[in-house]
Image (cartoon, rainbow, N blue to C red; front, side, top):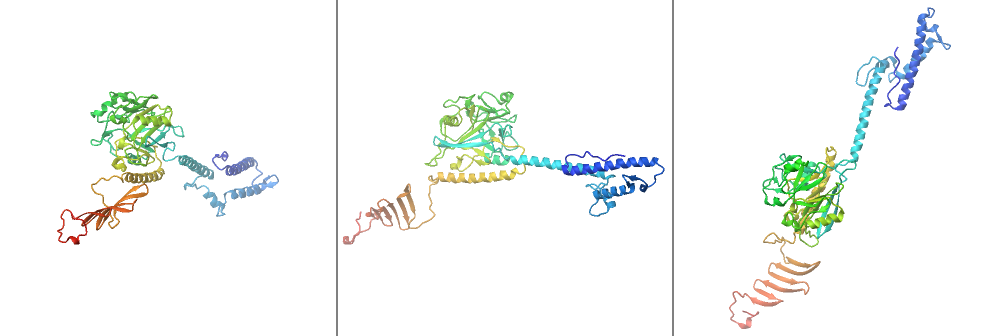
Length: 502
């Protein structure tokens, strides 16, 4: 006779398991006791019925009756029919009928345990995911203003909060890296859900090809190499562990790849290498010492990466953005970080763009500061793979980025309100007060009136009309200058003259 299983799994509720184990131990004890009596009864010819057998002063039939009631108590359900319940208890949760209730219970317990474990694992995984964002929250930036120019420095730590490397990547859009799509960094950020995107290489917009020695994820690209300025420009190379370095113009992409670098960019050249400033006045391009918008990538000794961008080419007073030279950019980097291991000047000017969580940090300078420029490749950071729930978060940030873009457009309009790009200035209202006012701060100083029957110049300080032109006369300080001077009237009666005549 097989014993009932007593060693039930601990995944069950401890209290519930305790009840079951106790019940099964009791059943096993009773069964062993009965087995012993039955074996003796087989050998005893005098005993034929349970009424003739006593146990502890009670007939065995009474013991059986008590045991049956105890079993009924354990298996009774809503029907109060023990026979039906005995049958039902052998039907598992999947509908399978088992030979023994014990078999059914063990299989159902195993399934329940499996479901519970899966639910627990899923809950733990979900809890860990909730702690993470769709973006790298470790990436931050600082903003400042120097040399009449606003700048941003994005700080990308070498490792995230879990100790994993935050990989810096080279990005291109489209199916052919040798002829990539021409899109803005903000559109690239939307397409990839990247945490951060910046413009990178120079290139030919007409040919849709990058300049210089180009390697993308180990693939050497077909690029423009016969561009004259490239003879003075260095190649930026990035190792798989984010280490940055630069190679002079005579080093080919094949040679760079042989040295273990799988991604390169074509900018202008290094400013700092191995902790020392290597840029000399006039290196790489004539505009190195001119004030322009800039994009510079830098690295600290601990391999944290910096992306510097500054505004520029925006004239004005309070809104003035002069731009920076390479020496000025180096000064700003040293102001914020006392020790710079490496720095390299990427494509700048209207291409300069720094996009964090789909929001452009710097201001565009194309189209009078109203338009973002399309470029051919990017330096970016993004999480992979992305979670489904991240799409909502990323869409919210994209909306913020679009709002920021609209603000930049209005900013561009504001900076160009004092410039007329047409040979006409049209005022949409015309009445006796229509005119142009010259202001000194909040104080009106002079005004040209363009009224239906005259044109005049008004001085607010003296509250007088200095100059007036009507249909048939001109006046200076309310004194007549002429009357139809190009075709004077014929005078027959001098006593009737009202004005001096010419």
